[in-house]
Length: 217
Image 1 (cartoon, one colour):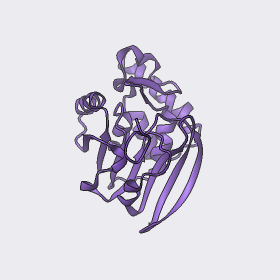
Image 2: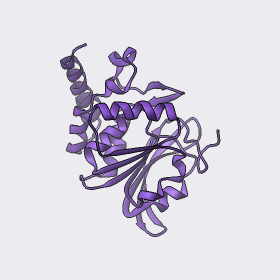
Image 3: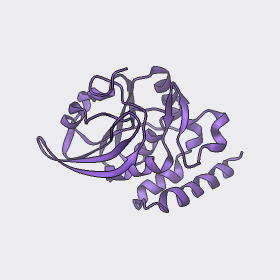
């Protein structure tokens, strides 16, 4: 497939999966049009890169469905000058989308081989505003806190307290919360030291968030 073929597929993905389902943030839409999703996958999966479903990236992990990436990103309400923490670097695709929209992205991945591969793709695409570390995402990254936004790309049985503590007042935390098989996508807006507003955006399904404040291995 040529670069133009991928661009055509990417534009079609944005029109039919993103805009048609109600994503309105023009910056999110532009980022989804720009970032080459196929490059974050094994070459054998490139023909499926812009389809409406998650795909495997190895180590029993997945790259999320494009609509879910757009929805979670839109709910962070990014304007361009923010510092964002991502829990679960995964393929690096969501990381790249965030890097298009925020000033700085800090991303934590617990599986070293996956983090290394994501870093290479992001470096090849010349992203210079992303810092990745290998570790337990459920404890957050206090060194660079507080964050304007935190996005968790794995399912947790409850909201990890360190993440809420590392969120700025006025900031948003987007996280799938629920059981092992199905969750709800929840957005928490921090309104005070231990106060937040909560919105539920319906059912979703993610791999488990493993760590001290998530699921055990």
